Image 1 (cartoon, helix red, strand yellow):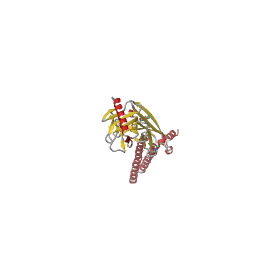
Image 2 (cartoon, helix red, strand yellow):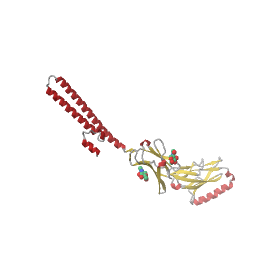
Image 3 (cartoon, rainbow, N blue to C red):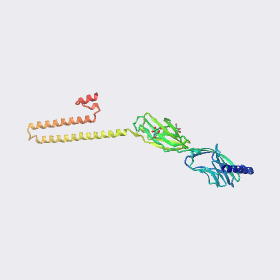
Image 4 (cartoon, helix red, strand yellow):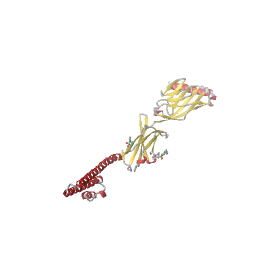
Length: 331
Ligand SMILES: *[C@@H]1O[C@H](CO)[C@@H](O)[C@H](O)[C@H]1NC(C)=O
Ligand SMILES: *[C@@H]1O[C@H](CO)[C@@H](O)[C@H](O)[C@H]1NC(C)=O
């Protein structure tokens, strides 16, 4: 049936071309190379140039190296691949492909027969697939300032192979320092490429963060991007140091508090002493002085102990009163 139509159509188009020598002053304009996106509707816009009154009688779309026509229309009747159709026939012989597939890729011959003659053009369809939003990661997961780190940016399910570029927080291009791995996947007539880019730092400077990776398709059109937050290993340390900060503060409050209490106590005793100078005997005065001295000595010891507690790893602040500690540190 199909071959019969083609034969009839071939004879018919030959006849038309033969009987209308004026068919040469108009042209059929179609894009010669079409980049279609897999899974989407592709429109191949064609129109007639240098002619007003023209009616499409038939079209035939034939793929290179294939025997059967891909799609054809003769006097309103279409046949062939159901995903192919004529779009807005009154405006021109534009083709539409719904749910474009990788199998649609290739070179075609597109013949359009009109009541003013026939024309033929070559179409080249290539299929691309948009990359999914990139996924970023770092190795190690927790990064130390000044330490080594690998930044990863992975994009999958795109086609054909694209590119990944790296930029830091100030927009400086770091792509030169990165390397990319492309992995081709070809299953069930679906082609895809997985891209993985690694940006390596021997010593990372957090001032450069955040880093952004941009995924480009094969035609250098941006498909997606992702900004990578570097997780600092120091955040753990920081909470540690803030913990020791609280002990510092507690110790400080304790030192100052005991000093104030001690001073108040001393003041009280002095006052008592002054007040009782005439009523107490010499014995009690001596007692008072001894108590005061003992108390002050206790306070000094306490203060030294606290000071040591606060600066355990600073040898120069350790007083010779604590030889065991000093020798420990020295070892
Ligand atoms: C990205 O790809 C690399 C190399 O294939 C892999 O080692 C890494 O785990 C991937 N990262 C993510 C987040 O998928
Ligand atoms: C970034 O660097 C890469 C590799 O050197 C280069 O191909 C790309 O054009 C640069 N991008 C910009 C925006 O400068």
